[in-house]
Length: 232
Image 1: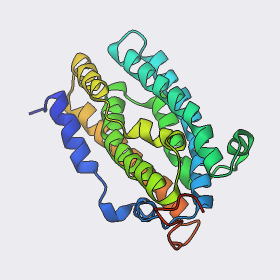
Image 2: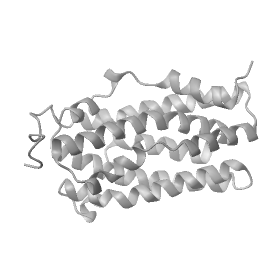
Image 3: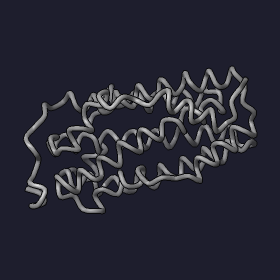
Image 4: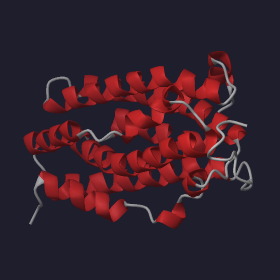
């Protein structure tokens, strides 16, 4: 029996939730054991990712313009625009100006996720894509929440410098409700559910690849700063 859209989202999210040990960078950030240079690389790679993802979501919105999915993808693209506006402050806190953010070379392991989303924009079955993206948001949001807390506690970053991560860490139940409504309107069958799982598995794998590619750039360091002293 095909599950309801809400049940399908919860099931896929639970199936794909990565084990805590699989992300090699976030635990280091949580303890203040990643150098600021690595945070700068994270910011620069996200600058490329967010711009690419925004365009991919707009392509999906155009493909689905006459269906409820079109509005959903357009709202996700608007969110990427808001997040992009917060990146310069994060880059500045890491020592990168806007030009340096834009000119940093892409890392293949970090850019696999936006490459997959671009593929979905052109080839993905829309309902399955909604399922996969919504399932992935939980893991990404959790990582961002941990990172935002760590940047304040261990690195002395300001609220403005943490706003990029705060944006994605903030729960958006209205978006999830819209995703459920979009899937319900399109109709859910076993083929779409299987495709959603397939897309979601790839997105979650590339999500982990992003963090672990960065982790491989630098060994764990001593705590970045004394939590009570702010930036060194």
